[in-house]
Each structure stands twice: as C-alpha cells, then as structure tokens.
Image (cartoon, rainbow over all chains, first blue to last red; front, side, top):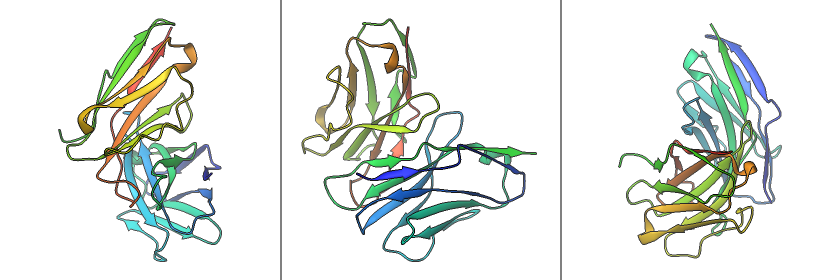
Length: 116
Length: 115
C-alpha cells in the first residue's frame, strides 16, 4: 500500500519570505498523481497544485511550485513571497493512476504559520 | 450547487445514538469519497463510490459505519451506536471521474462530537 510522509509537523515563515514543505511517499507504481492541498481554519480543503508522475517538468501555480524527484520519491512544495493568507495546514497526497484504486492517500499534514 | 455541500455542519450526539451525515456532490460528478479527519490528524479514507460500480468500502473502520449513494448523486454516511472515538470531522469529496487525476473537490465537512 502507498504511504505519504510529511516529516515537518509545523513550520513558520516570515511574510514575504520563501518556505519549503517536505513530502516523501512510498509506492511501487510508475504512474500516479501527487497533490498539495491547503486546509485553512474553515476546514475547506483547497487544491494548491498537482503533478503527474510521467511529467518531468515541475508544476507551478503562481507563488507555489514543487520539486518533484521521482527516483527519490520526494515531492516538496515551495511557497514564494509568503502571505498571511497562506497560513494553514498543508497536506501532501498521492493518487494512483490505475483503475480500482481511486482514493487519495494523505500525509499527516504540516501546519504553516506566517509571521508578519 | 457550485460546490460539494455537506450537512449538518456540526452535530453533537450522545454515545450510543445513530447519526446520518449527508453529502451533495457537485452536479455531474460521478466519483464520491468520504474521509474522516480526527483532531490534529491527517485524512483517513472511508469509502469511495464511482458511478454504478460497487463501492470501495475498504476504509470503513467497523460495521457500525455504512454509506449509500442514491441515484448516483447524494450520499449518506451512517454511524450506528456512536462511540466517543467517532468524534471527528467527516469530509466528503467528489470528482468528475476517477483514476485519471481529475481534481477532487472537498466539502467543508461535518463536525461530529459524541458526548
């Protein structure tokens, strides 16, 4: 079974600075999808960014980018120019690309604090 | 609706009572998921529905938990004889299809407290 590990329970960053959240995963599959979700205090899970494993190019969404290292099974999230609104729980998730195993497998999350 | 809708938003129930949590997915979404999030924990998969296929129930923690999806749309998660360890946020999510990386959209969750 696939597992996702987030080794940083909490992180903090100064406003306007850059922070990187770590995520590693374990799988024997070659094709899959990786996601970062943000969960603010409102509890709403919001998709931040996603990466297809077959794509070598790292995904980027405005201030959010990933460093996807397939051989190392690493998928870190970089937040540039951090804003107060970025404060939230961040979850890394894995999803198989093969039929019959559709669910997202989540890490335990990293709580990000943004200091003014 | 525009997003995944869940009700009730908050529910307090006495130990031993049954509860029903409702999820209304995004219109047209064939895949529907239930997750449980205990305080300070990650998301635990419970059950997955895809179209008319048999649901993936592999995450249900005990036979006190069940879920159904009527007409391929609204889903109800039922917890019988609730226990204090059932206290958690129950999140529902939906997507257009499964297994191809389509974005999974989450509702705001139902916060269940068992006293």
